[in-house]
Image 1 (cartoon, rainbow, N blue to C red):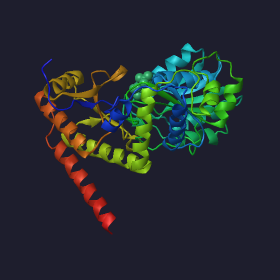
Image 2 (image 1 turned 60 degrees about the horizontal axis):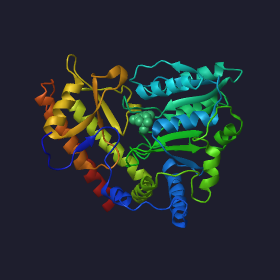
Image 3 (image 1 turned 180 degrees about the vertical axis):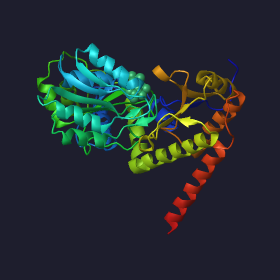
Image 4 (image 1 turned 90 degrees about the vertical axis):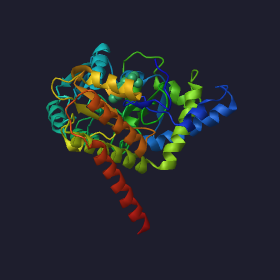
Length: 398
Ligand code: PLP
């Protein structure tokens, strides 16, 4: 590998770039996880997680990846043989469905075209038909990282309520938490599943479950065997800021710093920043004359954009050229859309010039790879970003 100068551009939709403040916070001696200082750190983290998940209830932190947090949500609330309702929004919904099957659940997997999010009407119809209330949970992915489609969770909640159905609502926010507006409590979610390596700007290695009273009640009677993932012992130890096993101490130092950064910026500003970068990206894509995979503008993702390649052109070849020439990693197409799409991650520790560097790399790569497109994508994005900054300045001065 040729030597490189400057930083690698990690523009996949997670893991994301880890800010220097977080790297420095983790570069510390590991402390005694049963000592007095640790309890102070633990309590601070558990308190600061609440505004990020928008909940007044507990948030469980596991050493583990997002997949582990999926498993935790299942084993703490459901029993083998339970019917659950899931929707094929993309690759990650498909993987969660596979996991549900492995645990002996009986998922109904509503088919999807990987270009739309969850249809709330389908949820309402299926639940209204389930007069015996055999469906125990609705399990959906908020932001499909494989497609760049964000499902409208408040409408899913409304669909469940309209059907007057008691099913739990389990939501994967692995690529939306701390980048796309999300409100665990106000949206009536029972288990919110997340991970550290995307909007939280940390390395991979932590998984999360934000849990409702109803989810905790379900965990008292459900029949799934579990040990490591069991909420009960963790909740008990968390009361004083500790965990029942060795936590990922240095990742927790990083989490503490990342939460401070998010709360200093303010969650509304974090979401607005992501919305703006996503819109600038879509303007670039349209100016290039390429297609965005997501077909419903109300479901555009603010953390990533998946772009369809013109017929006969390979997305992985384009990504390889961009990596070799500009030291930038873009997201691959996953599952059904492998080779057909590439994904630009615009989430986490990200600013206007990071986005412009990213889009410039893509535009140069499209030319180098001989992909038919129009120039001017980066110009369209710059114009939008500058216009927005000017409008914000004018509004602040008024
Ligand atoms: N769900 C979504 C939406 C994801 O984006 C990912 C990973 O990218 C996962 C689940 C799996 O998480 P992990 O790879 O951390 O196990």
